[in-house]
Every structure is written in C-alpha cells, then in structure tokens.
Image (cartoon, rainbow, N blue to C red; front, side, top):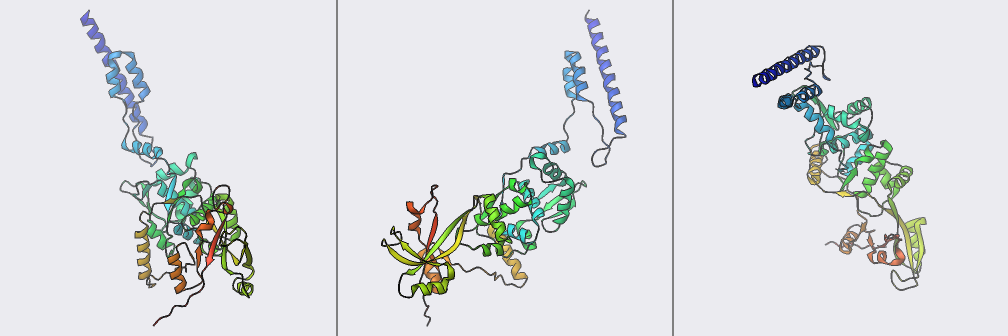
Amino acid sequence: MCCKSQLFNAVNLRDVGQRLLAQKRAAYAQAQTQTNHVGRRVCIRPNPNRLTKLGQGSGWLNPLAASLQPTTTALEQSHTDVAATPLAATVAINPALLQGIVHNEQTSAGRLWLLCRALDPNGSGVLAVRSLRQQLTDKASYFGSWRRIRQVLAQGEGVFWQRANNRKGQPQLYLLGAATVGKRLAIGRLERHNVALPTADLLNGTQRARAAFYAAFHAGRDSNPIARATIARVTGLSERSQRVYDKLTHVKAQANYALTAQKGKDSAEIAAWQHGRAAFTFIDHHGQQGKAGSIYEATRLPNSYRSPLKRAAHGRRRKIARQLKDDLVTMGAQGNVNRPTRLFHHNGRQAAKANLQQGNVYLHLHNTTRTAQMTRGSGEPAHGWWQQLAPLVSHSR
C-alpha cells in the first residue's frame, strides 16, 4: 500500500512538472511579440492564479506552488513607491520668487515647479518624468493632461528645470534650485519671511494660483500700511485684481489713521497742504489718545493686510539671498539693491533714529489697539493708529 502511495505521488509530481514546463514555454512564446511601455521585449511570467490552483489540488504541493510565485521587480517596486508617495500639503517658498514668476509671465511653469518641489520631499532635485506624469494626471492631484504638461515642461526649460536621460535611458527632470531660479527671474532681493503655500491652490488653475501668490505676499511681510499702487508695482497685479483676490483668499484689510498734530492755529491748513484730501479733524471723545475731548489733526493712511497663510521656516533663505547678492556684484551692480525707505515703526527707539535721519516717520500706538472700543468681535483691531513724529534736524560737526 505504501509503494502504491509513493508511486501515485511521483506520478502527480511529474504531471505538475510537465504542466509548469508547458506553461513556461507558452509564456516565452508569447513574450516574443509583446513589448513593454519603453519598447523593450519582456517575458510574461506564469499566472499566479494558475499556480495557486495547482497547489490547491494536493496539500503537499503548497510549498512548491508558493516558491513559484512571481516576485516584484525593482522597476515595479519603484512604480508602487511613486504611486504611494503623497503630495505634500504645503511647499515652503519665498514670496519674492512668486512675484518674479508673475512678472515674467511664468505662472503655469512656476506652478509646475512648485508642485515638483512638493513631490520631492527629500530635496534630491531629480524626478522621473514617468512618475511626474503618473502623479499630475491622477484625479486626486490633477494638474492637466499629459499634452498640457509637456507644453509647460517646454515652456519652463532652462528657467525652472533641465531635462535629460539617466544611464538607463529614462527621461528625468532635474529641478533648479531657488537661487538659480531667482537669478533667471531677475529677482534682486528676498522677502523677510518664507511662506507655506498650499499645494491645493496650485492644482486649482492659474487664477487660484495667482491669488495664492498674492496672499503669500502679505504673509511674508510685516503688517505695516501699504498702498494699493505699491502692491501693484511689486506684485504686478492691478488694484481691481487685488480686491478680487482679497475676497478669494480671505485676506483682511485694516484701516489706518495717523495723528499729525493737535488742533491749533493754522493746523488745518498745514495738514491739508501736507496730506491733501486725506487730512481730517479727529475728536477723541473716549480719551484714547490723551485727555477726553481733545481735538487732533489726523490723516488717512494706507491699509494693512493680514493673510491667512502661515509662515514657514527660514531654511536656506540667508544662503539664497547671499547668492543673489553675489550674482549682482558679478553683473556690476555691486550688490546695492534699492531698498525701500521704512516709514512705519513699532519701536520708539528705531522710530526716533529714523526720524533723525530721514524724517516723515510714523510710530505705531500700541495702547490704542488693545481697548474694547477699537476691536472687532473677533478680537482683532478694527483700526490701526499711528503717530506722525515731528521732523528733526540732524546737526553734524
């Protein structure tokens, strides 16, 4: 009986071996006419479902069937890793680069460059074009069709990235750094703070991206008064577009007023001559600036803006700013970038020093913004109050 059982097992094993050999030959014959996505011939391995069925026929064949299961190649593993890599929620960027993108009419290419940085959390600067196509044509992170992405890649060539093949002949995208992009966009200086820009705004079209760039401009600077005309000159956005983007990105505007002098003889004429139609008379009924009922000459200042975007870590900001400055010296500018004159100060000592050097300086009155009469329901100040310092004359020996 034992001999019959051994003979039966041997016959079954030979039958299984013949089936596997026939299946392997059929797969090899089929591979002679099939090619993969890059035009190379590939071998079709045995179907794992058939191997499982063979193993289920006899329990003692399970180890043999399990050993014949196809293994995942390195190329397939890389495909799996790319598909599983999530798009970062935010990307850290200096608002000066965003302004340069808008000024040079490179919004689409700039969006793609920022998304590529979000797809490269390790900062290697190298992305496979195949991986980029897989990510940005997916519904969850859709940038556009593959045809549109190829157009944008050609548009940003040499400014935001370089394209080349690796040793295996696969197309790669080599991202340029922030300093190099800043030089290509002719950016003179960086803003004081980096901003965490949401990648969701970069995926929702050009208008939404430009609105996010506008919100990043306000998030990267101090909340000092700034005129609409100045914003238009810096960002390249018209005043009408600014108001539209204020509503779209929930940027809050705050009115500012300045006390120029107490009411006196000829004070109204002097204020009108200095500030024009922005001058008016202010009566301090609640005693916020001094004695209740005092009368002051005041003027309307530009608005301040508060952006909902959060600031990011400085990172390599100083190094990038130094590289931009060195590039200006090489071009003959000697690094003398035209820095704007600071008119608004929150520190009395700095305000007095600036007033001695240049005059026409405003000091922020912090005590007035903490009162209940000057705050909205959310606790934010409804108005900003400033004090115009009297001009001083510097005496030099």
